[in-house]
Image 1 (tube, rainbow, N blue to C red):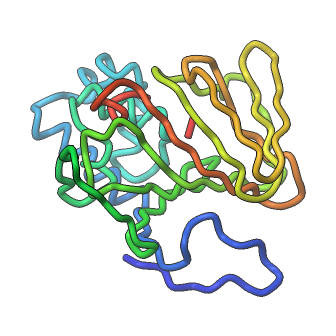
Image 2: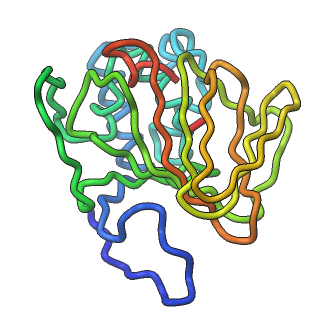
Length: 218
């Protein structure tokens, strides 16, 4: 399904193109279930391998819960799948010397409970980096236990708005438009909107060569 709803003149610009592909939690849940069943894994076995709760996996497969990037990446790792297999359509492995372009209409939009993701380069698997656009809604609240962490490194560039990066050790970094941050994504971290309008960001996650999508935006 493709969206083509223009934003109103008074609304902040969307963080993903208005004609992007919308992947809802029902379809993504079905893809997750098919991938699990193809490997003959029970819900309990996948929960044990991924460290994602059985209840969360079950709800996600039934389209009742929109999982975060961290949890989907953990599940993909447990299934030995590239995340592009879940978010993309039959992605091909990246070949050295190749060039891959993502047109605005090919951005895959996905809403989690806290963020709007615009997944980029989903036609390519086995990438060293996982690039995505994101939107953190205004007036988002910091709640205990919401910190995300996953293997690797993470880079964030603020396209518009204000972003607060909260870390589990109590550190808080205030980021404005065109500010950026690079950090060890194994540190517990959380994006919080720091302004009155949604913050728009570019996020790049990296784990290890050829395994960026088998790790675990945040």
